[in-house]
Image (cartoon, rainbow, N blue to C red; front, side, top):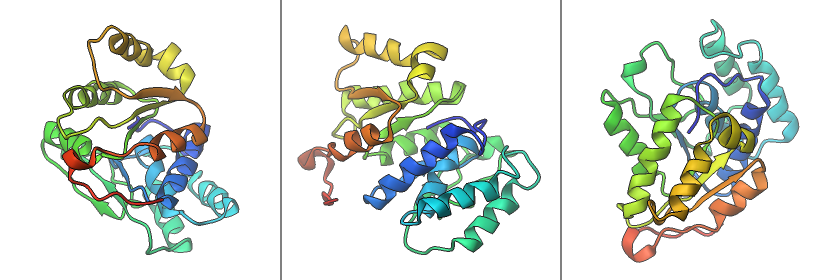
Length: 226
């Protein structure tokens, strides 16, 4: 989860790309809202899984000519990266919404499911995010998703509670102190079953998600070894 305003040239975009690349290589499937910024970066990381760091940096340079999702070459630059670093091994899922019809869907996602109703779309995102949720800096939509995710976790609606990882310590504690509020609500017992953590480190995010497995008897899922 994260905002579409994040530039392709921003260090935060690059961090998400490398994080998604690592997770994809471990067998996770990246899912996002499918737009630009922080919603595009995980799909780029998935697309570049098993590529070298040099190839990732080259792809980022190619995309830097159109850093904003509204730039005229935003889409064409992505297709150029797809063509140069063609792959058929790794999938990712974008779930955009027709409500934001001005916003293009990232071509780095191998599958897209575009919804008309945003509430159903958001609920779908949460239902399939059984491997964990990563919240990167964003605006009103990302804040909504934090609390929308907290409710099914609290009630273990899907048979388990997905880890809620806040990536960006300064943002989530200082700029938009949502993590501090969530931490307070967990400590006082308003929310139960919320496995929350905050970090700036890719390794810590990966370790947190690797250590999590849904309750087998409730989730009716097949565990996949790393």
